[in-house]
Length: 103
Image 1 (cartoon, rainbow, N blue to C red):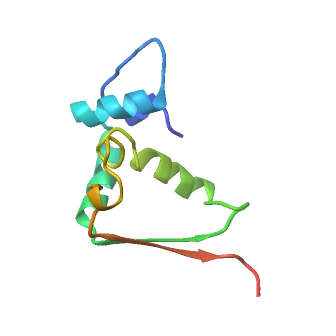
Image 2 (tube, rainbow, N blue to C red):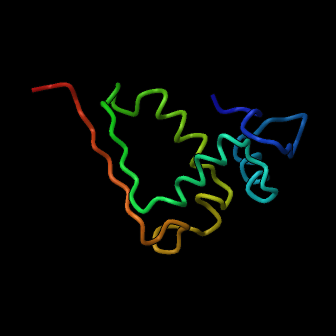
Image 3 (cartoon, rainbow, N blue to C red):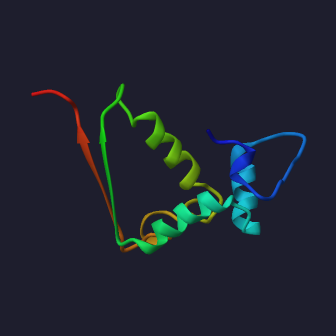
């Protein structure tokens, strides 16, 4: 689940907006330790391989939750003009290996 527990900082205590809190956490180094550890792993790796079974035309729930929390917007992972060859992971590779449960 993506909520305030993802952050050690708070941008607006009265109104929770995921992207605004992600941007604030990126600027303030305010991600929760477990999420920051996963982000550090992304920066460390040269190749990311996501192996998963297709589940109702998408990612399984646990992997979807991981992606939602770890691939935070606001400049740390993406956003702020950091796209494609100007992105933070330029020169790295990512692959998906998807199984569909059919013959």
